[in-house]
Amino acid sequence: MKYCFGIDVGGTTVKLGLFDEAGTVLDKWEIVTRTENGGENILPDIAKAVKEKMAEKNIDAKEMLGAGIGVPGPVDGKGFINKAVNLGWTEKFNVEEKLSGLLDMPVKAGNDANVAALGEMWKGGGAGCENVVMVTLGTGVGGGIIIGGEIVTGAHGAGGEIGHIHVEDKETDSCGCGNKGCLEQYASATGVVRLAKKILAQTSQDSVLRDGEISAKAVFDGVKAKDALAMQVAEQFGKYLGTALANISAIVDPEVFVIGGGVSKAGDVLLDYIKKYYTETAFHGCRETRFELATLGNDAGIYGTAKLIVSVQSH
Amino acid sequence: MKYCFGIDVGGTTVKLGLFDEAGTVLDKWEIVTRTENGGENILPDIAKAVKEKMAEKNIDAKEMLGAGIGVPGPVDGKGFINKAVNLGWTEKFNVEEKLSGLLDMPVKAGNDANVAALGEMWKGGGAGCENVVMVTLGTGVGGGIIIGGEIVTGAHGAGGEIGHIHVEDKETDSCGCGNKGCLEQYASATGVVRLAKKILAQTSQDSVLRDGEISAKAVFDGVKAKDALAMQVAEQFGKYLGTALANISAIVDPEVFVIGGGVSKAGDVLLDYIKKYYTETAFHGCRETRFELATLGNDAGIYGTAKLIVSVQSH
Image (cartoon, rainbow over all chains, first blue to last red; front, side, top):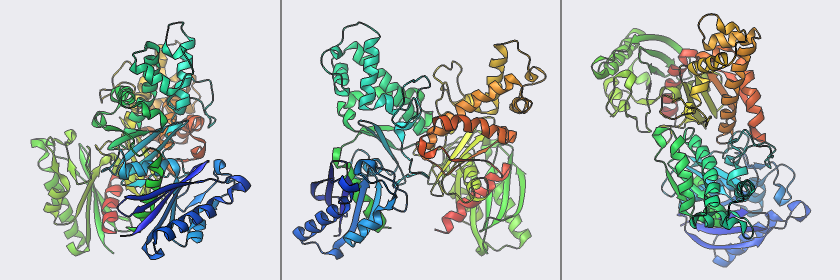
């Protein structure tokens, strides 16, 4: 049996996992992401942590397939990252080559949202499938497109930028990307709050949402309690997201959509609202496409990065 | 040098091409598509035509890589076609196996719109690229998504069904697919005519479109003559199509969009209207994606089917 590491670099912590090539996680742990001084310590810290783990577990370099690393920024097919502002990385460099040099083993790099999708395909909500679209509903809306078991990176690293599908012509506020009317403005955690505030401002009707702070969780808790205004918010959310996913089906026609991120903790009720509008607009051939909740949570990234290296080494 | 045949089956004629493996067309010709009796003669007629050509050109079976065939209907990854109403085929069967048995050589099958995209990637508007989205603006709107040099067929054969992207919530007429507000209702030849008729009915303003029959060609000729109403039609066409293509970029982020089909004969002016709205809504990373007109015309299918078999045999 050979081994590999999956490494998911976030702005606060780096998650690491030791896997066997079958995808069983043997150990997982975190280290702090030191973003100061242009993030110059991040890769050396990772290399140190990996080497210590190999020593602790008595794993020889010859038993290693390599390591996969996921970073919050676009990574091209050759391992170059342009920049990752959250990590303090502001200059283009080859993250695969650099970490490979520090570790003396093969390294494959990917964008964090894309590798999370790959992880969910391998061992999560999309297990058993090779054509998977993952949507991560968090602070923003992220995504990953997996076709034939491989991440669709795109010609400019914009493959799977599902949050920036244009869904509303009439929007007057700008998205973080600079455009107006992006899916992220309605289907992210902050987007759901925005929709809720607009609906609450339009009426004096009573609602549980008027008590305490509005959050995506409060909205879907309200839906479960049959709160009329919360249900209106969920309808709008479902319409924007369900229609966008129907359009994704008319383009890449996945076997399954995997829905993850903080907002997805609302569970099946969330899928119900998405599927209602998905079914209305989807092309007939793909009206029955499966929807699953993500199952790996914050571990999707370490699974996906491990899979990156397993896939390469088994080719 | 080895050879292959590209075969593009339409409802009226079957186009055939003899290619060398480098993609040079050595001969091309057509036979009639005999759709009567459930289209039972179509594959035998093709086999006869192929064998006669091999005899005429003195090509031995050992020199053949095989044949690719494109059909107007969804084809799955194993060569099964569910049905192709235009050909009289109403029952599911394996078109690859059947034609391979008749020809005694390897056969690969694909959907006609998808293989046209592959042809344009190989030798047409997308030459030199491996990530290409082709849009065919004809009676309907067809499409093909090529990622890493391979057709994205989709889990239900709906990959590249670009014409059925939902773009308009307020539509009251139904698309041929049964849904309302599909891209095809605005960006096909018939869709452009529909847009023109609506605009003409809303005003009594003078327009060249009031003389003679309205067609997509008449609209874009009107645009070239600076006709105000024709330009309004082109703006609407450009908005629907340009926004849909921007959304495709946020999903698969191709290197190039290739625009083909009858409507594309309008030329660069058509691309100008598409690009105007594409640039407004595209994610910043892919705002500069190239747009090219298709160059292979009706031969895209024979090139693409030839490429199907060249790709397989060279793996």
